[in-house]
Image (cartoon, rainbow, N blue to C red; front, top):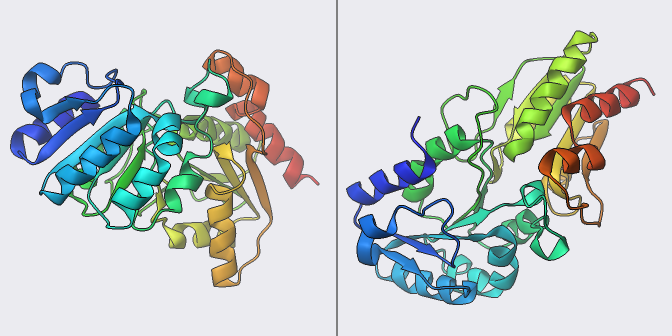
Length: 300
């Protein structure tokens, strides 16, 4: 399977309007500058400048794809994204690196755990959260083709599972268990799949819903999971406020639904920095910890 960088390079070869930009964050695109020449723009540590320039390029028919650390992209440049990109609905693509727990060794200033809340509140903005590099690569052409501005929670890790066809706004569901449905996105899909395996070994019938796109979200998949199972779990490396848990609550209110739910997120606190495996263990976000919490909730 091609990497994110290889896929982006091929897209640039076939579409001369795509421009790759970065605010001194080249980890995922380090080999592109000599290949793209003037179509690769590094503005330095100046996220606001990058967004302003990207908006100008988009007004002239270009499709900028901007790379930066998620926390600085969504916080430092928020007003520029909202005003210059979101309100006019320009096709600027925003790729946020090391979001959520992936910023494992960093403290609060570098932890993007309110990014989804911020980005989904911007007019016209879509929010995409791939579970691994396979899904990221599958999503990339759809992201570039979309006329909307899109925020991408970048993750290019090993595939959590085999995926079906990708479409923005469409979730994928693994299993049809009637006891519990685990709704998640991003790299935590792998932990949700581990929890599913553990639960099923104990006789608890589980399903996992990989939401993939949080705006637009697949409302029907959420409603189906709520109606067909005894417990609905939201599992995310984000603040409880504004992320998947809030989105599900909004859907329930709109559809006049109720369901037994177990929200698992960060409740107005930042996580303790450590190696990723230790962060997951300390915060209770491993597949094993998730399975235990679900079992305890079901047995209440």
